[in-house]
Length: 192
Image (cartoon, rainbow, N blue to C red):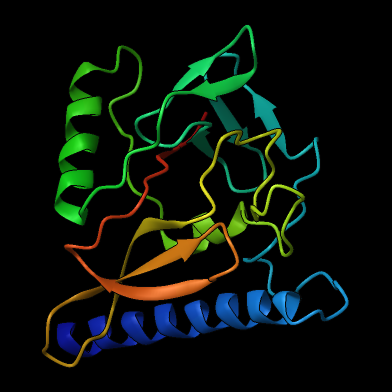
């Protein structure tokens, strides 16, 4: 298979996954009875055994073998209060990538933080809104805005301006957006 064909196949797989996430979220929003999705990639349970609190502002997802920053970019973890302090930053995709590079240069223990894929971000979303109007565990990820977050997953755009998948932890679900959109960022890395 040629490189171009391989890239197109990967893009279509991302589109199919994105559609699955969107349909799963749309069904929950439409008042459908909650039923765990059959795809193992979206709206998984936020059970306590799944996440390990690393006591440093991160959580390790045992199922996916990845570690998440508990706070959105711009916020700081307060271990005493077990919450995120400060204001989450809405950035363009280039600004988000630059911020990730800067964090990796100054981070004392890990220099491999990155933007999550659509699949990874969908794994931490809840299938329904909590009382705060957010589709994510506020216990695990406190202070998360009910808005769109960047992924590193590109959408096939047919030669026009490149689009990137963004996922909302509010009621909006999934959207493809241009790189100059201002969205929030949650960082992830492999391992623990």
